Image 1 (cartoon, one colour):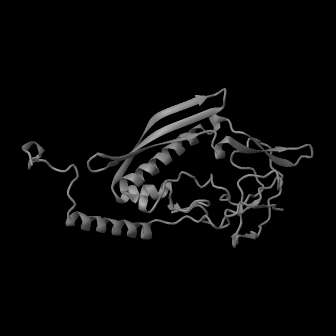
Image 2 (cartoon, one colour):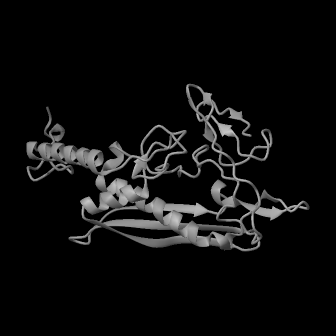
Image 3 (spheres, helix red, strand yellow):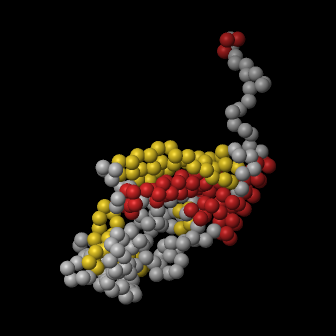
Length: 265
């Protein structure tokens, strides 16, 4: 072997990776065990199966219909921050407001930092825009020629939901950054699909105006009586968020598995 073929590595050269020690492994095991216990004992799973239940959609995490993994909700992210002694702050990254096109979009960055040191541990960007399903249209109630209040859909003016768009972008960014900071992706995903976006997770309609109703006239539409959910694919069907042209003006029953719909009376 020639001298030029010999490579001498200086003893001072070190790996870019920190060495894995038994102490680090044990610390990680203990951390995971404590986090699992916290999730099990302190976080409440939201109910997205029974739209008639009092705690429907209320909780710290839950499996959104149409998805498979547990989704971390805002209250759960706040509890995660508290147990890890973390703080959260927001920065506006970008915004677009086009009054003529009735379009608005906000992008926020969430920074999760240590309350003890102020060091930023994780950050995440998220956006919300007025063309998303739950903001694009709203239900309005007006009296017809017979004096009966009837509902219809209209495009939502962006200035009626401006604050909502900003808060939703902040919430999405905060949840994403919290999962990154706490290493909780083993348990949760970010709510890329919000509960209100998923088909069939809205409580049964009452026949009364919603909070977005623009008419100031009194509503005379009778409230729908309590209904028994029909079965499909071995489980109760849910009430769809919107009316369907094939099933009529009343939001139909909706099967989250096979996507079939059934007219409600």
